[in-house]
Length: 222
Image (cartoon, rainbow, N blue to C red; front, side):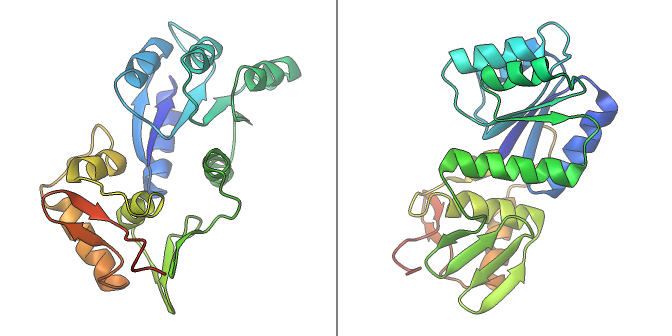
């Protein structure tokens, strides 16, 4: 799952990038409003973390333009502006949440998960397809009576597949969901992760479609 971080405070942004990667998100970081809008015109994201006090274009302006373009992805404002008027303005412009700095990283991650659930209409935190379950809060995957804790990248890959069971994801699509701009991707990285997931859970959990990609099959999980 790919996140766009828009933050001009380098120290905070670097800490956020580390925390988000540890939580299995791919992260792209930009430092001003113009760069955010340009990036959104060329790359798909599942959510945005948006500061308000940005150079070139402030966060309110960026938020307004994103919603005018019809983009419906979750947007969480991260800001030190704690005034009631600012909070109301941010939410009325289309923010899904308004988080005041300083914040606890675990709370921010929980708010991000909640916003992503609301976007997909998911009520419970668990992701499931038949006998396969995935818990985003602790990276635990369960197949029948077998439960295993996954690495961040294993979790990110399985989460991508389980959100759209039956859909084939190509290698490049999976890499796009799992890796940010500055992360090196080895040629066999996806194969290695899928092999590890099959070994931890069951070989039938992920199916390969030769020449096309991989999927979580609906028919084998019921």
